[in-house]
Length: 471
Image (tube, rainbow, N blue to C red; front, side, top):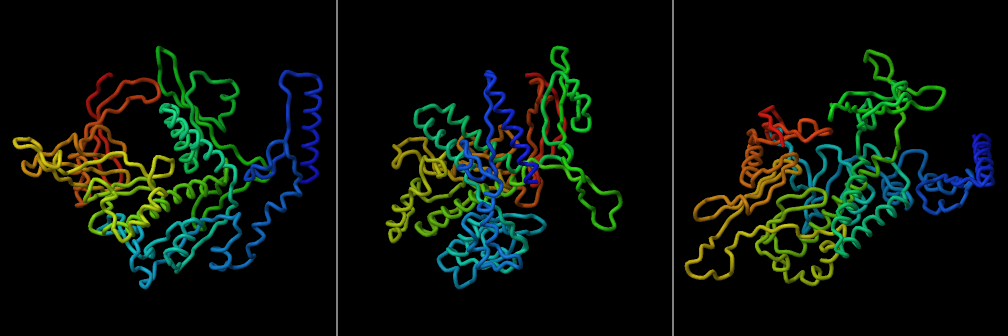
């Protein structure tokens, strides 16, 4: 392998030298980078394959036999990270004055998230960041570890995304909101793509108006489907299939014994790092939110603050006052002022207030004859990315649709009262409300829409056809 690699490198270097010597318009440069996790290997620095030994040194620190949780996992080489699947709990002696963990509970066949001290009912995913925090700070003890997968830390991706986040922050400070929003979309979309689970048949889809001769002759790797016509011109969906491994002996995934049929060919993946990168990003967001909530629990009065909803990097709080500072326990005022800036602010990665719903009358002392009336709110959330916060006048019982807040994933133009009622029905084990929604007939080619009746359910959305109209 070493000899073949050297021959390849020498051939490309010779071609590069000849190409540049003849004075072509596009000079070529050739670098050999053996480890994409280290930014120091770019910029023209060429390393031989033998130099890989020092970059694999961190793996050599792991034992060949069974792992010790304390020595090999918690105190693993700093260049390593891991995904751990296991169970555990916080002992009763270490729960005093601490905030419980987020756990899944199942009642009557319905799963919901709640507070608890034990993660024993099912296997949970832990990253190195979350396991070290829970073990060293919260006193968490693992009772069972089913698997632990080690990965080398990457020094390139943090620089890429750090630069994008810094550019977004500077654009926002300059008042260029369109550029800031575009950069935010870049970060959110590319991070989400790390967790993309492509179908078994294809890995990429694009829209094309004409088919090349080469593509038509490669039906093994490209699939076609007519999408529709615009002004008499046909458009096609091109599904590019995953290529087979480029090696002589084809690897296979063998089915379990007793299952009929032959073996399944193993397709080559774009990268093996997508899952750990995606899991690390999402779990880090959850860990940071947990630290923020634990900070609020330590520094505020218990009766003054209630957590209504949380999802990775956002939360809804019910407070007894409009200002967070008014909820602080005076005995913890110093800690609150010292660490508040770590979790709250306009900088990326910190929580910022997006909206506020108040139940108090407008003005502390409304003038006589004023129509200002005291209000009350109702909140319900039946599943992730879904909630309804409805506001009602206490005296008349009339709901104020324009005063509430909603988050209904996949549903648009849903009023606050309807969102609350639908979520409340789901929590009670009933079916959710049915909403009339406009959906494009062909999302790729035109803007003609059709109206559908879509039911709000705990597991997702159930739709049915309706009338059709143009827009």
